[in-house]
Length: 119
Image (cartoon, rainbow, N blue to C red):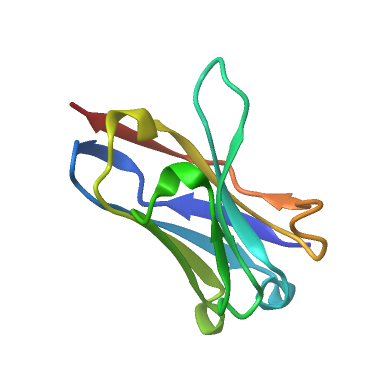
């Protein structure tokens, strides 16, 4: 079992930056690919970014447009989402997720962290 806990969300002005963290419990996290998703109330959850177990390859949604960077530090069982040049439309609850069958299936999810970008 892997438990994930996100942190780092908050209120930021447009153009600002935030770094989200995803801390995992369980020794297998370092062996799993992981990803970040977000959900706006009333809309479906959408993919943001994901990376391999080693963090050497990353994939991003088109809307990221070079503004976000996903990374991980397996020694600390932690993944990050660095978000720069934030826009009001980035306002959402952000979730991290992981599992052995990513991207086909994410078995483990965090509780989410709210990101609010003011204009």
